[in-house]
Image (cartoon, rainbow, N blue to C red; front, top):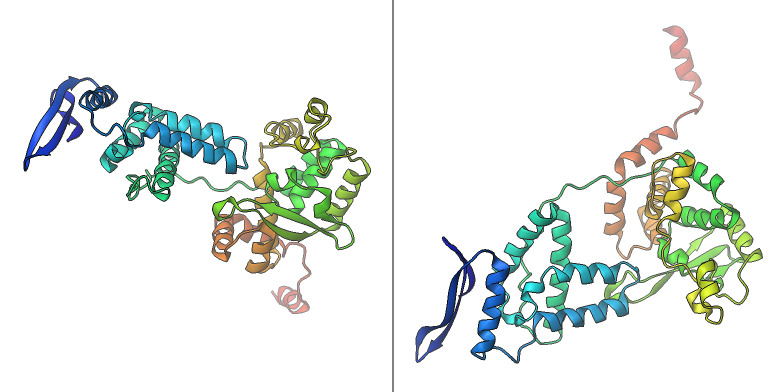
Length: 359
């Protein structure tokens, strides 16, 4: 029966079929919480020699973290997964086959209450589901117990889009190299990691375009796209080239990493500048914005000015037009507002002027 709740607290029971009949091999009740009952259940299974050769959750989590470390492109992905999977420590020595859908569902609900966040609990479900998916793919588990479990409801916040003048004020405060960095992010609609990985081999001044590489494809495969450069981007790239770090393949380099690894240029690029933009926003007296909000702004401007969905898709690097459509829909209010504002200052026709005169 596993671990379950009784009137007097949590309990466990281990039953097996012997000679056609269900026999209780071990049981205990009166535990004050589920984790305590689960730990004792695991120990009881060890004492009676059940499932000792099966893949445990601990081993499966290690396998998943090795995969994350190999494929993740964002520096926070590995520590976030490690922390989230640590929440399931009570099941660490439990064979995967003994973890049921009901157990996972109950644990996610408990986490939502403990963390006071449905959204955070959903992230834990995603991390755990990936562990089981890897075990299924490797043939060590027949079914993912997380399959079929719905995410807890969350309130979706509207995407934030900064005003153009707010971005301009931030750019004015940045030093020349950082201004070039942000200008390229702003007007290519690139993901920040695509700019951090940008090399001089990806810059074609003659064609006026940059090649951006994304890992957001199935299996973590890298895929490139060429994005045309407007004059502001070209000027920013020329400035970066004139003041480039010698012997570095990257357009933008982290001075700290250059000093720490002078003989290894591959380590010189930025990974993620988490405080840099927020500091500039605070100095400029504007609301905090992230790198992705610059992408939102550029996408909404392209839509407002009549760019086709497929063209915007190509610039953003989405593999499906439906992704771009959903992306722009989430930006709809500002896009519509910007489209209407394009009418501001336009000269009205003589016919309307005559009507006003007659009125």
